[in-house]
Length: 124
Image 1 (spheres, rainbow, N blue to C red):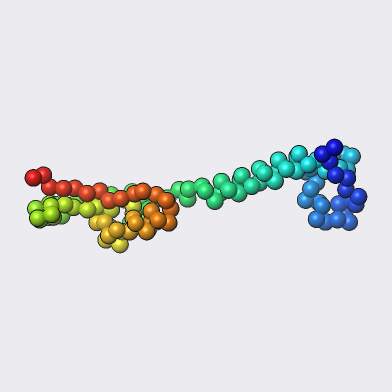
Image 2: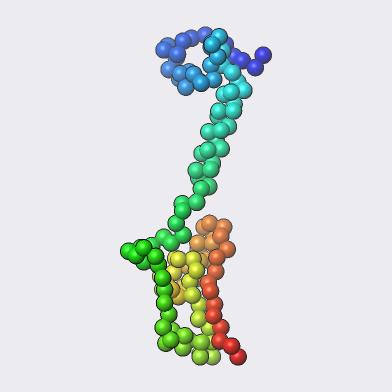
């Protein structure tokens, strides 16, 4: 038998009142129902911890409805330099946004993500 008999009523055993959902009409605890319930609570708790917070951008241009970055022609002058590249942030954590400052490395280490910058190179 997979049930345990409870010898006291709920009023005299307040801790057992939590088991009310697993109690049958005969006063026995249904271990299968209790195990299923505890397992379900564990899964729900785990999913709440793993659930995405829903926002990618933690704090850049939060005063506007839609964050749009436009680059002017002088910004593209970087492409004329000897190394000829423009490095732009894609992780939303750069203190130099829209330019990359390497903040994605800390973000990736903390979250297991693999985001990196957008690099535009000059054609040779």
